[in-house]
Image 1 (cartoon, rainbow, N blue to C red):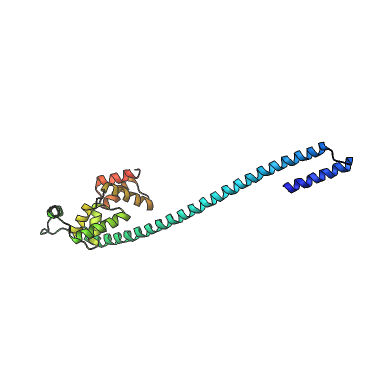
Image 2: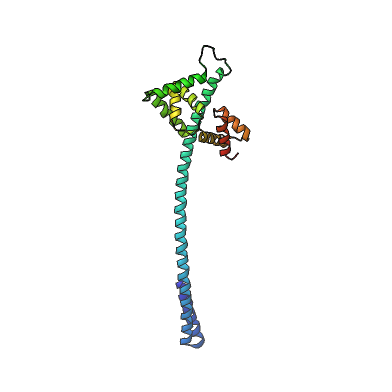
Length: 225
């Protein structure tokens, strides 16, 4: 830009010289003024270009960082989805294996389930320290709850499927610190992430998973129903 105006200045000088034979001070001052204006505009233009270049570099850097963050989050989500799918498959296999026992009558010689649970709770109250099996069952319960939601009954069944006794599974579930209302809400959200439900259908599904009626209703309300 500066060179162009120098050329223009020279041409102007030559033109004036050709017309009058010499350049007057007034002509020179006019040309100098035009040159100064052009120089000022050129400086402003250069500053604007530098500002835009700096803004472009900043935006490119920010975009690059967001791309890295997005890729990392995508990898974490993919890993969690794989873990969830694996546990869901295990749980489904367990339910299928237990379905053959549904509807079978309880032998009269067996103690009713409610009485058995009462006896198990009484035994737990008399214990001072947990056994190794109870500690391991508690650790396994924490592992399951870290990746998916369970009802109290569902988690006991899952631990029994893993080979823990009913006493060990019950100890783990009662000492894992889970809020079963919150677990119902999480389970409701898990279901809605993969398929659609009506409120009554969602409550029925949660009850099927072992949640009480109140817990199932809480879960449905927590996700917006």
